Image (cartoon, rainbow, N blue to C red; front, side, top):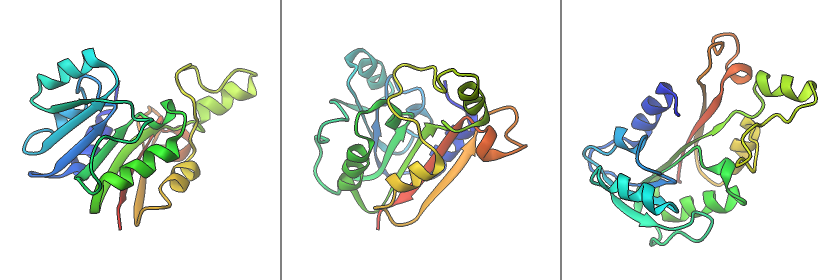
Length: 184
């Protein structure tokens, strides 16, 4: 599931029309459908069944593992989307580097990760529990971790979204960190 705020932020970062967009880990296109109109979309995923459903949205699909080198030429996309993906891969920096490789100069990387250091997770840790319940999450990210991953890009921006108590403290209460970075 994804937050409504994420849809808006991703739509703004993708822009368009006429953008060539790579959506990493697109699954069946639940988020992709919100920025497909007017853009040329390529959805990459390892799940062939999900890609079949994504193709019904009218996007080009590519069966591949994001942990390998992306099967695309250098500087071939205007935007790369990595929504709720980096926490699931063994080497997030490799994925970010591949994003930079396939982005055109001035291109945009947009993505999101769970805010692992939100108050709820800190409380779980204090109670002797694992801060993350999802066994598929291999990494936990703080805002600083995300900034470090994006260090090879030019400008970057972080937003803290989703959660009932976000109004109290965005960094402490937000469920997700949405990021965007522009390639120099």
